[in-house]
Image 1 (cartoon, one colour):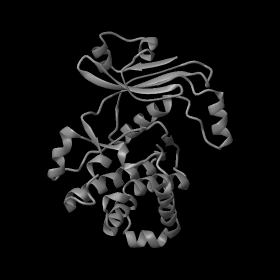
Image 2 (spheres, helix red, strand yellow):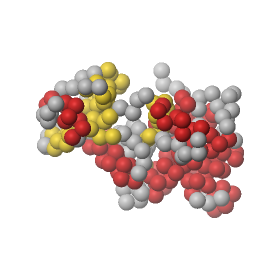
Image 3 (tube, one colour):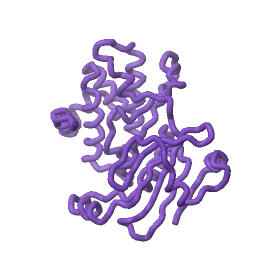
Image 4 (tube, one colour):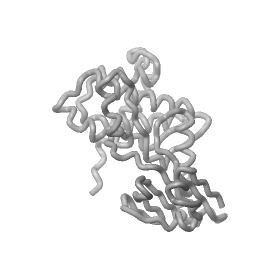
Amino acid sequence: MKLEVTEEFQKDWGDTPSFDQLMALDGEMYRQVARRKTFKFLLKETFYFAKIHQGVGWREILKNIIQGRLPILGAENEYDAIRALTKLGIKTMTLAAYGRRGWNIAEQESFVLTRSLEPAISLEDFCANWAVDKPSLKLKRALIRRVASITRKMHENGINHRDLYICHFLLKENELEALNGNKDVDLYLIDLHRVQIRAKTPMRWLVKDLAALWFSSMDLGLSRQDLFYFIYHYTGNKATKELTGNKKFWAEVKRKARILKAKPIKA
C-alpha cells in the first residue's frame, strides 16, 4: 500500500487520515462511471476534488492490450502527470493526497485528491463569444502564446495529454486582472487522467494533441495569422518555414482536426 498526504491537508483534516477514510469520502458528484467517480468536497474552509478508482477489471485491461494501448489502472497516472507537469513549471492542480492499495492490478483501489482551482473559468468558456465579440489583439496573442508554450514544453519533455482541448485549460478568476496588464497569462492544465509520459513523445501523439487544440478552437473566429502565431511559438520557427519543411505533419494535424469536427455530438 502507498499513501501520501500533504501537511496542509493533514492540518485541514485534523490528523493523518487513513486509506479507508479517504476512499470513503463523498461530495458533490461531477462524474461517475463504472468503478470511478469524481467529486468535490469541502474540508474546513477549503474545497478539494477527489478521483476515486475501484479497479478497472480484467476486461478493460485486456481490451486496451488488444487495441495496443497501455491500460490506465487507477489514480497513479494522474498523480504522476501532476508531478511531471509541476516539475516542468506548468501550472496544474495541487496535490493534497494520493493512495494506492492492492496487488491485483485489475482490482487495485486508488485515489488522488487535489485542491480546487475554483473560482475559475475554462478557456473554452472565456473565448466563447470571440467570433462575434472580437477580443483585443494583445489579449488574444497572450493566450495563444501561453497555450503554445505549455504544449511545446510538454511535448519536448515526452508528455502528451490525449485530450488537449481548450476546455482543459483554466483561468483562475482572481488572476484575470493579469489579462489587462503586461504580465503573461497563467493557464492551468487539468483532466490529466489519460496523460502519457515517455522519454520522447511519438509523432502520432503530437498530432493528436495539436489536432484537439485546432478542433476545439475552430469556432473562435481565429485568423490565419493567429494560427501562424501559434505555430511560431510552438516550434520556434516562422510559420511559412515550418509549414513548408513539415508539410505532411501539419497536413495530418489539420486532417485529424477535421475528423473531430465531423464527429456527431454525443447526447
